[in-house]
Length: 427
Image (cartoon, rainbow, N blue to C red; front, side, top):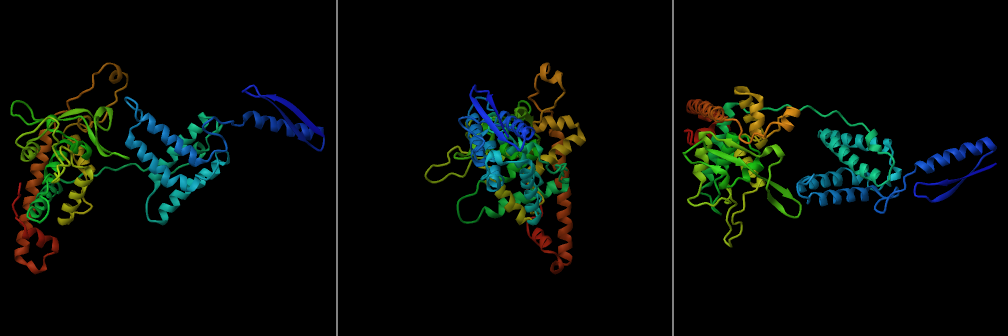
């Protein structure tokens, strides 16, 4: 038995659907199912169709985001697009890029998510965060496919991901703060006489700026002397107006706005940070002169170019390795340390304002309160932190030196190394 029907689709085209069954009821049942599928089937657009490959959908989504990153006040920034492109290139395209959009099912996507976790476990790495991020970006890719009518439903939204881990910030002890300041100065001092280009000597100052402000390392490296006020008439401050970012095809560039909208702020700095900045301030500066310039080449390159965050991180790792502190400190932990100290001695809201985080108090904040651009004065709290840390580490050095004198051949390598250096604070 044959059953047929004529359909007028949404684009006003007319199609005929025919199905055959053993009897009239079976033929009608098959016809009804076919009609339902035809009416609900995705038809695609000029750019993307149900038969398009996943890899093409990913590429189009990235290209679209990159174009939008050039808008005034862009919804997404170029470095974020670069990060998404790496994520899709590493974790989506190699495993799902060959599928056609109409072949994807929630089961296929779930198997892919499970595979990321399984590969992480096999390699001894926790890839929970990677799985969550890849799942989220792939869902965005297929949401765009739904907009183009290449899919009627997003199968990624039905796949489950692991529960994200709750971060547990860990701050440095005050003694470790003192040890860190001693270590970076000792490292700069010992490499001063080595052959080769003269080092910038900026690491101790960069560390003190991070400890005195809670700035991200990109914000520190982006500082210009026009944003630093060290004059005696008034409070010494730094203004946060930019950050350094890495953009594909451009390298490290200064982004003329902080990481977040709430990140623009002015910070009152403590005396130890003032002293550190004074120690590297050249005789003559312009407002656009970087506080931490790159090393000048003989041919004049790198004029007024800031030192990259990669170089500063590399210097910090070398200093930590020399002091046998590898893995103990990283720039973001300094930010956590500053926030923890301010929150304990003042208020969590003060720590949030210092770090440039948005404090959401609902409608009042959105419509009635002007955004605070001057961060709370935390200089006394942070000055006390480093002074206590310096004193604690000085006493620890004296104790180690006494132990070394008593039994030098039995002392561990780290103790002998410390004892061999200048045992003073070296500030």
